[in-house]
Image (cartoon, one colour):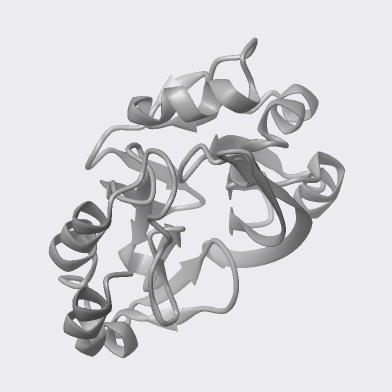
Length: 209
């Protein structure tokens, strides 16, 4: 049957720089009937554990360490025994949410994660956050972009630890080089494709966000 992609939407709050916003997050579950990985354990460990069911959870992958993407990660790890993986450049952000619990292992650029016969390649794409990563699964025609790329443009860069020129560099060099029919599974909102977003790069640069 091979690996497939499932989406769970959870709701909670994003807090940074003294502000708080209500948000809906996409939690991506990739795998088959036997084993899966979770990408971004947001808000509700119980709902995520229920979606995983009796399948073996092999990893909880954090695309970055803003609280709305990691707030349920330790609780999900405790329930399932799965390790939490994060790029080390995002440890300062992680510690704002989980000061007493470190991630279990580091994500590194070009590392591959295997699940249910599919390989996901880690792409370090800083800008929205220093340790932001995307996961590219060529066999699935999929990119899991976290908050780096959305339908309509880059992730936000107006807050601490973020930088607009850096995210533009990450998107243009690492993401827009992927095949145009690659489906982009985002951290919030609806999916898009590389081909749909690529023509708008100069517009984003001109508008500055």
